[in-house]
Length: 224
Image (tube, rainbow, N blue to C red; front, side):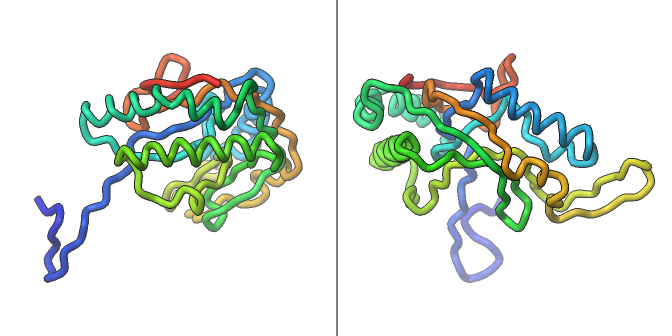
């Protein structure tokens, strides 16, 4: 099986696909109600787009992703997070930061619909925390990317992962779509999704079976 060599004279490094991530889950009652409002609106009015909706139970902000290839690296990454309480205290001393989400936008050519937190002191503190955690994980050899260029805090609401064929309401007409049409989400352009007080940063798996609550399998967390 080819891994490092292809049928050419050049040598290419096989890229590892991320399978774990650090995130903050947005599961407070008020903000979940708002995400459900968006979810229910789209699923009822545009049912052909259902497969692109993110289940509100899975809503989160990703700090950064990583690849963990074996049980030792998983255990070491978990320990790296669990021993980061001092970073948490330094970035957010004596309080839980809150993030307020409002409006909707798209990126990747309209393939991703998302909302972002408002720019305020708490977002600055959260960003500082993300940078500090990433620096520690980088020292331990888990990541090797430029977090200051790549970290764009957002919450994904819809995602078109590949070219998709959808059926319209009549069940007969099919259409290949390459982006999510604006009419699907424009009703929520200025929508106030509310405020969430951050509880913890979690290390979760992209591949393991989800928990009974519908969220990603969590390996460990540190609380604010």
